[in-house]
Image (cartoon, rainbow, N blue to C red):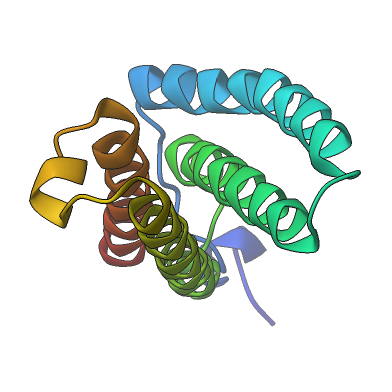
Length: 148
């Protein structure tokens, strides 16, 4: 018969990882920012529903990428994810951001076809490099989530 406390012989199934309060606050801020981003995305989607199917698809992809970045960052920063979930979320963020980048490059090429110009000129336009930066940022966050 065992003597003493039975809990001494048990192995912990989970590691006791404490979450930094600043990281938890940043994660909560990501969750809070996801709500207005979703509302703006839905309003944009309603606005483009009457137009081309490609614009509707672009709106869904762009909003989905932004929400995935915010929610994924929030989950990672609050310490909710285990290692397997981090790998899956990171890979998903990388894939969604890569799809977002492809659609944005395609859209920019269409704009260049209408107005003329080169990529060197287009990359100087604020809306062009900001869109590309968001896609690269999503991929980078996905990598950080996977390696953290």
